[in-house]
Length: 355
Image 1 (cartoon, helix red, strand yellow):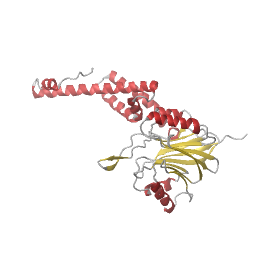
Image 2 (tube, rainbow, N blue to C red):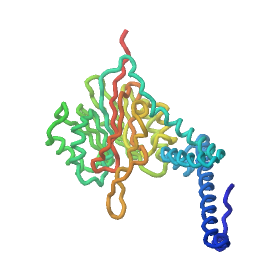
Image 3 (tube, one colour):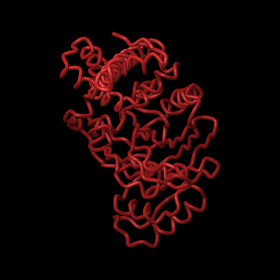
Image 4 (cartoon, rainbow, N blue to C red):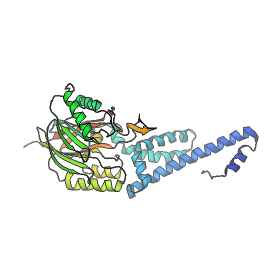
């Protein structure tokens, strides 16, 4: 079944042994053999990565890449499944179908109807997380988008002091499309992160070595909300995992009342780090969103230019504790000049009925 590599001279001699016509036929045979062999190797590699992922987590690079690009791996498996079925290569089709079913089943909740809010859910709160990108040339489109969507709590990452100044100025001078006039801002310049809200904000902590976390307290009319705005660095997934695990254990889970943990996590919803967080917190997109909700990259730097790109992964998330319930969630399709797409959710505050 598998193709044994040959020297280039042997391949050329085989191609033209029976003349040009026979050479074309032999070439097609070799190409077909390469094609089927590549599909077999791909299917077996993905299956092996899925099995290793259950036992070793994200320790291996190939396992991390498979999880990171899981939606596209799924599409590739389905694309390979079609010719395998058409040419009746049923063993190959089964080898492609098994990992495709495993990945597809993990994403099944994103394509099912959402659950109804529990009794006692009230006080709608709109939350947005947006990595504005420090290379973004203008904050005017972002300000217009914020005015239009009118989030109650806005988590910003990669925002420089000049960008924040421009954004704030545009928010104040643009025609007000929101039902409020004042924006409260908590800025952590060393982290290049900010929390903007229509409600009063009390900064509580900034810690660069713990997933670049900015902790604030937002005084909503119904109940004060503890908000964690994070942006852990790319690369070195083990350090990122440890930092988020420490943040979760020592600060997020010990916070009283409603808690929101959002930002650019630089990890996808199939990773070991995400699964650790989702054991203790709910995720807005998985509770109330639809589809894959890919958020990055919206732009790529190539040939000395910033070019629009098709988002490949979802690394921007909004988590919350049991005090909230998500009634809607979406990934906005306008990046406003950033390399990320904003993610947004409508949360309802769940209150236990009084006896």
